[in-house]
Image (cartoon, rainbow, N blue to C red; front, side, top):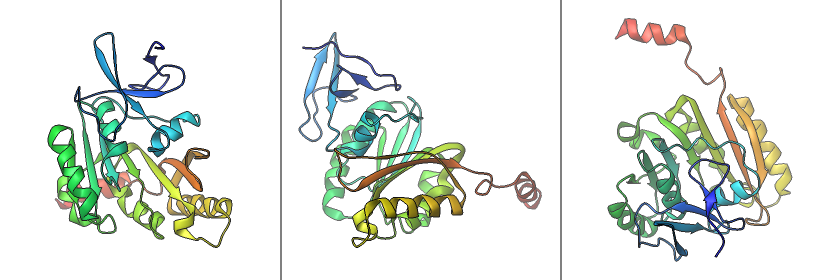
Length: 238
């Protein structure tokens, strides 16, 4: 077996071919992934064909703000495949997992019962008011929702991001417009994000791991940040 060593990104590991995260719950596999003991630590293989975040890392992701104590709002958590790896990485933080579909949510709840840093939220990401009292401000916003209005949903949830937070949008081109070339959709999405005030700092097509998918990474620009004047006005009104 190849030696597992730290990846260049924090709290991610590799043996030169496969990505791994340190298992927060030793002995427990989440989606049938291989568990590898190595010098007293158990690692979970991270499959890029099952996780767009893993695919993004293998495509050369440069922006990775996930720290041990990070808070993450994960929109479209499904059964928790990628969210569980994020849970491994932010072991002292929290992953707020929003999922609307009842069937995957039941599996997500079972997963969260054994992972203390994951909170399941049965909610519609189209209506973030439904969970804003539970979530608060987060370090990372991550969205993987295959809906036509996925950009609109993403923009609605940017309000949860801290001033220096980072946002990830996993774009599924065919869900937005099946009649257009994916590259045309990607360009349109990035333009819409920039016009809304997000500063796009990197983007990557996720092929060959995911067909017709692109990851967009951004930070809040001054257009989306509350002005000091408005902040002071709110304090004075408070």
